Structure formats: structure tokens, C-alpha cells
Image 1 (cartoon, each protein chain N blue to C red):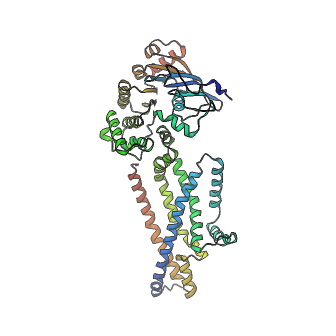
Image 2: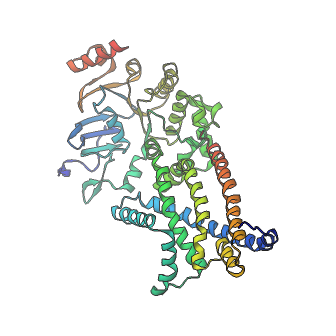
Image 3: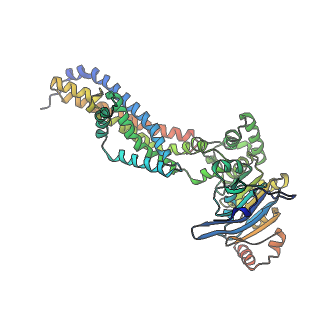
Length: 222
Length: 271
């Protein structure tokens, strides 16, 4: 039966909003890890060393082919058996950051591959070092075509933070579960969680588009 | 394996050429693009390379810019080996570090300009001097402005390449290459991607370079009239070899080899 109770909804709202901050923090930190580590993975796959390329390539494939929730469990529950004891937050950030870095490395790879060969040749002709070739010429051009994919995964990581509830990270889903568990009312908390996610994801997607246009303009590429 | 002891570790003597290709061979798998090429270019000389497509003419420039590795022979620039370095008295293949130092005396302009799209004209010109030569920004800017004036692009110095025409982009690309103060300049079909009406603005800049600077230049072109006007020497490439070479008047006016005659009359017919 549909019996939505507004008073209950308002009562739990502060608690959910508090948890939303945790969710945003988890998504932000996890994404930060993924953005940097993803670039490391993408660049590592372009080194002249065949072994490095192969090992990284296999790691990326492995991470992409196994479920995030398994990776979260693995870091949190299996880690201690090897003497690595991590708090739910740290374990969660490592797992989700690592997971998304594998996806982002593929986005970067596509972006890097889209830079025309002539740009590399111009760098050689100007005698730029490899590092400067990447950071001053190639990556700035690989960025705009990567932004759409990067944006998708930003929204993706945000929507995947509820998985962290399985190891007890106090994010939105965990808060809703706790409310449901103690009051036996699930309609309001879960509905509100859905609305909160929607209210953040939708504008975020729009803002990413605007940001992409801004970056293109800034780099004189349109 | 090639016996490297036949190649000197350094060229010496009174008339060391600025560029020397010594028995240079380049192949892709079974396909030989250049077959034991010998070619000298003296300091200040303008040498033009012509020939049918697939004759290996662009490969000559790309090898000199170290964009392609070579399979045999040695290239020397200013008396020193470019593709190889000396180790215990013999030449071995140059490593990345040696290559970086060795190619610093060479500059190149490309068919498709290859300007950096995220930088303005002047930023394109300053990039090398600042990031590679370590020049202070003010000095690099001054040098770049001078060169952009020389190529007639100073009023567009703050434009991104996407806002420039092909001819304008190519002129900026020439300024960018010159900003590194190379001893040898390579022009790889620099007018091939241009609309006919703007070819003149690029050839005009190259003419000016030939007239006013003592640069050593190697150019691949399909503009026969242009090649005839400004070259000191023209090399006709055919199937990976120099079929015929000489002063432009004699090569264009009185070609000796049948292949050269065929090529020149085919080009003339197409014009």
C-alpha cells in the first residue's frame, strides 16, 4: 500500500543529506585516484618495454573483467590475511579508485591514440623530450576527446558508491539501510536516495558537457 | 650484419659536406625504399628532390629528421654521424640520448604543417626555444616575433592554427622550425596540401630564405617551376635511387636519362 509519510521523510532528511556529503566525498576521492592512476596505466602501456606494457595491459583487463563489489570485498576482507588492515573508507577508496582507473586508462588510451601522428613528428622535429612531448603537446590534445568518457565515469563512480555500503562505509545507501533497519520503513529512505542521486547526476552530466566545450575553447580547438 | 668499420667515425678534410648519406638503405620488410643511397649536400646548398610517388624522396628527408631509422649505411651531419655514434672506435646505432643531441641542427616543415592546435602562432614558435633550448621567454618571444614578421604572419601571432588558412599555417610552421636555428632545413612537400592561390605565399618565404640566409636546405616538391628557380641542384629519384642529378637548367632543360625525360614530360602534360 502506498503510504508515504511526509513527517518521516523530513525527519530523516538531515541524516540522508549528511550521508550525501560522505557519498560525494567518496566519489570525489575515488575519482581523484582514478584520474591520476588511469593516466599512469595509459602511459605505462605506451612505454617501449614490452613487459611493462603487457603486465599493465593484463592488470587493466583483470580489473575490468571482475565485479567492483568483489574487488571491494577483496581489499577489505582478504587484505588483513596479508597483514594489510585498512579502514572501510581507505579500503573502499582504493578499490573503487583502482576499478575506475582501469576504465579511465582506456578512455585516455583512446584520447592519446586520436592525436595525429604528425603531432609526434613535429615534436621530434623540434627536439622536445618525451616528457615534454606528452605533457605539453600530446596530453592537452588528448584531453578534449577524453572528456566525454571521463564525465561518464565521474557519474558512474558516483552511482557506484552504494557498493561501499557492503563494507560499512557510511554513505547514502548505508544510511538508508540503517534507517530502514531501525524503523521498518523503507519507502521513504530508498525513494529519497533515488531522488538525491538523480538530483546530482543529471545536472552533473550537463555541467560536464559545458566544461568540455569550455576546455575546447580554451585550447583553441573547435 | 653490416661491417661498420668501413664507415669513418667522423668526416674530416677541407670540404666536409653539411649532410652526407653514405650507402644508406631503407626497407620496410621486403620492400626496399632506398637502395644504397649516396648523397652529399654542401653548406648553404639548396637541393631539391623530385620523382614519382613511391620513389623514396620523402623518406630521404624523414631519415635525416630521424623520423625513420635506417637499415644500412650512415648519415653524417656537419661531419658527425647522425644515425650512429662512436663506441670503442667503431660506429654503433645511436641511442635516444645521442639522437636528441644530433638532430638539434636539423629543422623540418611538413606537408600538413603539424602546428600544435592548442597553441597560438607565437606559442608554436616559442615552444622549442623555451622548452628545448632553455631560452628566457622574453628572448624567445623576440626571436619568434622577428621570424613571424619575416614570414609575414606577425599580425596573426595570437591566432590559433584553426583560425589560419593553409598557407598561413605553413608560414608559421616555417617560422617555428627556424626559431630553433637549425643548420639544415627540410621541406617535405610543403605546398602539396595548399590551395593553388596560396602556394605563392609559401614559396615566396622559401625564396626569401634562399636569397637572404646561408641555410642548407633539402626540399621535396612537385612544383617543378619553383624547383627550377631556386635550387642549386636537383636530384631525380626513381625506385629508391638517384637516377639523375645536376643543376636545374641541365636537369630540366636537357635530361640525359630516359626515366627523367618520361617523368618530366608526364609532369608537363599534367600541368
